[in-house]
Image 1 (cartoon, rainbow, N blue to C red):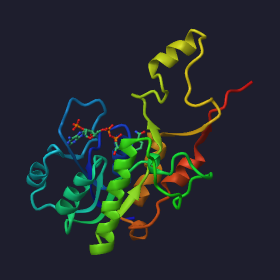
Image 2 (image 1 turned 180 degrees about the vertical axis):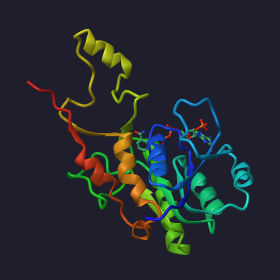
Image 3 (image 1 turned 60 degrees about the horizontal axis):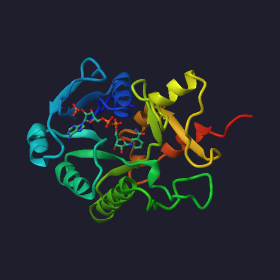
Image 4 (image 1 turned 180 degrees about the horizontal axis):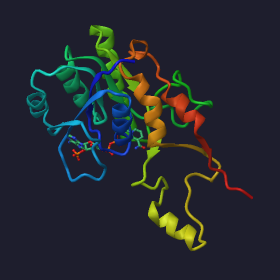
Length: 235
Ligand SMILES: NC(=O)c1ccc[n+]([C@@H]2O[C@H](COP(=O)([O-])OP(=O)(O)OC[C@H]3O[C@@H](n4cnc5c(N)ncnc54)[C@H](OP(=O)(O)O)[C@@H]3O)[C@@H](O)[C@H]2O)c1
């Protein structure tokens, strides 16, 4: 694929930091939009950084000026009003907008496994997941009504070197080292999907700018299925 101009909203987060590195490695011209907090994760060399707070759409529009991008990825939409604000900001400014949703949007508990892209979206147990579903609906409506070129990607539980993907965090590691048991969710037989952020990025970056994935189910859960972790205790 030829080099694309790509804007990541976020870009130094748990998931997005690996995507930033992978996008640069793929030869794309990458711009990040973020507040510019103290860097936990490095910004790759040759990446342009715009400074704005997404909580203030006017500030975002000022930072963007008249810029347009082949692809825009937002890692920071959590509420329907933010989705609507992004549609206003990026309508006509990009050929491909990617919304980072969540695999927790899938029907919970699932009526059948494995989860696929056609699994219904309903998670009444999580306000976060319900809001992501509502955001998805806003984007789908925008695609149907005006052709807004959106792709929805639903990552599963993702970790990086700064983040221990255990319910108890570093406490669990300390307990394991001390030979003590750790708490697990449910009765210890449930399946859980963990994805390393570089594995996510390797599947994600090739989607950027692909017309085939606009408004289509994406293979993000297929990636997750390949990495399904069997969390049952070993005897
Ligand atoms: N991690 C998971 O397990 C998981 C699973 C499913 C879905 N997701 C989704 O993945 C997305 C999170 O991606 P991530 O892990 O890369 O993000 P993250 O770790 O939360 O990092 C946040 C990034 O966004 C910037 N940022 C934060 N608040 C901002 C603001 N108000 N204005 C502008 N920039 C801001 C931060 O830089 P500054 O601090 O410099 O602004 C940083 O670059 C979310 O949409 C989440 O729902 C995550």
